[in-house]
Length: 538
Image (cartoon, rainbow, N blue to C red; front, side, top):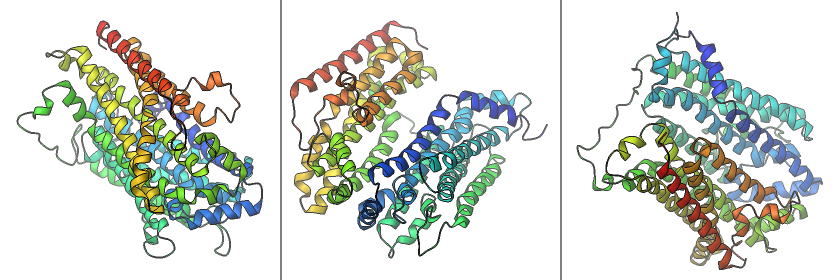
């Protein structure tokens, strides 16, 4: 038996375990990129309109921070500008989740020790996880190579964009496997990899926003910047694609994988290279009850979400100053912003659309925070807590309170960041900060409804709670983003709770639907906790 014995079997097992999530993740990335190319073809049918859009994107530092620098005005160049970097981010996120799940998470749960008792080599699990992410990113790149030309993009540029996205995923595969060797906790390893991704986004954003001089070299430090450095659909006078840039992410992935194998050979199973930090000899006063424990368990995740909100919405708010010029390049784009924002004034519609996006993402956070109840239950961590003088309702309510307060905090960050980003650009930061804070809180009742649905499913049908809750969130988001464009009936659109919250700033506020949403959310949470009180644990 060698150190790689059983790798093929573990790879098949990993594919089987992720047979539902993997196709969904690949589908989202491929459809988002291809859909962007098709959308630009529909919104900007003329070369003049595309040139105006490219000029607007290149002139606005906020747009460059969010999306990068446009390299030409062809459909392919605009698609790369609008979604190339973000597709790389999503490929990196999918890779990070897969690597940590099949290495450090299985090791922390004791599954790798059980598997290792059979005829399985020491490095088989690590090799299988790397093989899985290589396979997934090859599938993403291969599908994009086929789909993008069908959307009307040039074949050579499509191959360059597809391979750069897949190579970005491979680069973060190397980063993730190193993180999995450093620490003993899956959550910490995932946090390290996500922190590297966040730093990569910031370096690339600052480099692109600084223009051709100054700190533009920072874009070359970031794996995300290598996507645009490859220059898919590159325009004259600088020539076409730089295929040699692909060597950078591939080398990063290979070096990371090799370093991970060296680290894995020098640590004990279940341990990390970095020593675990000893805790206090006695628990703090905040850990004397379930509420403090729930906050302690989820505060790191909330901090990461809040940091991401602050960066993205500050840059998006700063981009609002040039949104009128951008929308003016396409009447179809103007109709899209008006539809999402729910009003005719373009700037207000754009800001309202941002708050809708903040609400949808906050609903995803609230759902994940509520579902921590299920992970605590299935991980056998709920029983020791409930064995003490802690009731079921009190324990469940602790995580629900964290979900509610956390989602409200995220909406506050989104509103303040958007208001500051826009207000500083136009010289009215104080007014717009307060204005956008109120607009953000207008989304909170809809967020609470989706959190209440997650609590209800956890109490009534725990085995369905994860899939069911995320299905509800996905349906609500799809109805709000694409329902009107698909000409769906208002009876169908009203299924989403976000159809009943005000579109602010600029819209009207009615108290009745907000009160109804809050009542529905409270009723769902109460029913879910009552059902949890009467069912078996596990």
